[in-house]
Image 1: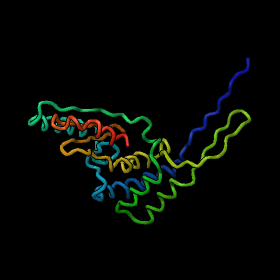
Image 2 (image 1 turned 60 degrees about the vertical axis):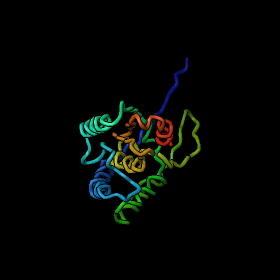
Image 3 (image 1 turned 135 degrees about the vertical axis):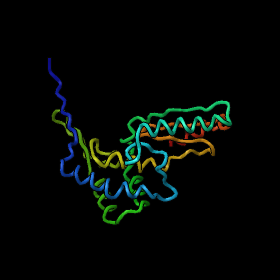
Image 4 (image 1 turned 180 degrees about the vertical axis):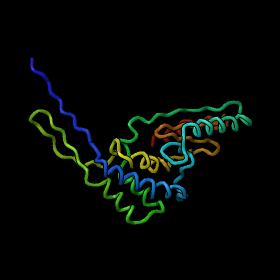
Length: 193
């Protein structure tokens, strides 16, 4: 019986590149998200930020639910886990949001260069697929990936007044008071989009 042989290639980021990425994140991206433009908000994100934590996310959800229960008979909390969220980050969308942050042109240009010029092909046996440009996803294991995801998700906000969002990494919690119960489909559609 013939044995099937699989070759799996994993993108390995060099140590010096990861050091540079961490420097860019800590020195430029984190300070830029401290004072975002009005169209981007980071207050609802509790992961991949210097001031975020699991504990802060849980306390915020509990506080919002408790506060809404004062004037509502019930509150609906919908927990959404976005599968493969990091793989769906479009570089053009991410860079457009990065351009809105208050950072030096040289830092933004470094980010453009970092996300451009990647390609992929698959080799199986003696056959090799055509080379395809990668225009989405964040390199797994990169230091810049988590901060990039936070920026990418920064424009996700509740569409109904009185409804709240709480984001922890790629998990999103919709907190809907009873008075907004009919807004569930619109809120879920918004998150999906």
